[in-house]
Length: 249
Image 1: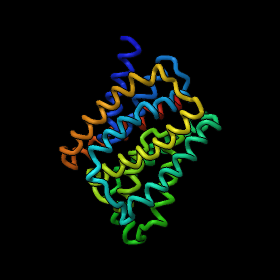
Image 2: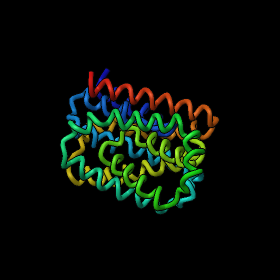
Image 3: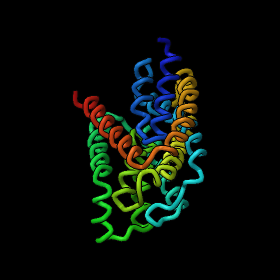
Image 4: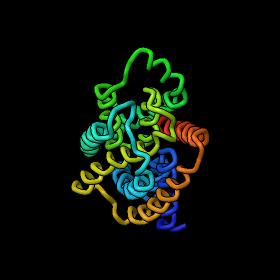
């Protein structure tokens, strides 16, 4: 299989995964590394390659974007964008060795939060009342993570919002898609300006990701919430297992 076909198919699958549940970089990053792109450059290239697919998915989901935990879209977006700028600059300035070791544990925490979201939300709402002072810092931290690495950042957003009582996954999915795209947008600008993109490998993946993102978003709008939740949890478990294997085995 040629590199072009491999990267196109990886983009197609990654774009679909991001639209449905997140975790698309689990496919795109290894694919880029497998064709010889260095890991940091592959990370930046993956972010750009999946970005147009995220835009396509966000357009499909645009009518479903709404408040999270009673906090408006604007403050959540501002926190996400600021975090994305910080994270993308950190990626270009710091080595990834330590982060690669920590990443599986972050994904494990996100998976546990996602699985226990409904139960956690009931308990948390009896002790705290999420508002902008709670949601915005969490979203900023997620934006930093999204700009720096981004693997399963959509899953982590859903986990955090679900734990804070934001609603069911299908309801949160449109806002999740838009916020991930916002974080990626500013990261893409930083990566392009810094010359951190491998354009030859990026183009076929972009084409596949746009098609996958568009198709995945349409499928996601029709699936029932239990199916979206099951798919999201399956993706989270698989992504966590793969990154543990990558870091320690």
